[in-house]
Amino acid sequence: MKQFEHELSEDIELKKPKMYKVLLLNDDFTSMEFVVSTLMNIFHKNEEEAYAIMLKIHNSGSGLCGLYTHEIAETKVAQVLNSAKKSKFPLRAVMEEE
Image 1 (tube, rainbow, N blue to C red):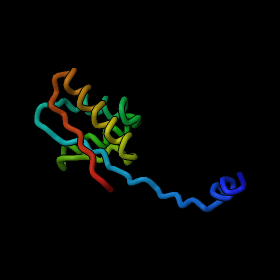
Image 2 (cartoon, one colour):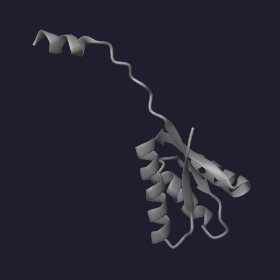
Image 3 (tube, helix red, strand yellow):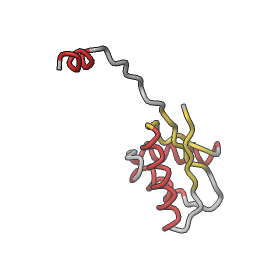
Image 4 (cartoon, rainbow, N blue to C red):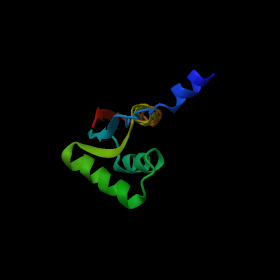
């Protein structure tokens, strides 16, 4: 029992998880309103932030929606793609390691 207690008391080095950027990509078909709605509903942006990100996507081809751990970033990308598909828009989201 003492050996087990000793093992638990050793210092454990915790590493921060890798973070991933989730980006929305511009296309010529998805409405600006849908992009703003997506940013508000999936990424929890307020209307002002969502509008600013939507303009960045529109003007420069992509826009940063947030920084997340791998699993959360994957989930956000899947949510965007599912929502876009349901609404018949070609909106794409990608994740990139920071």
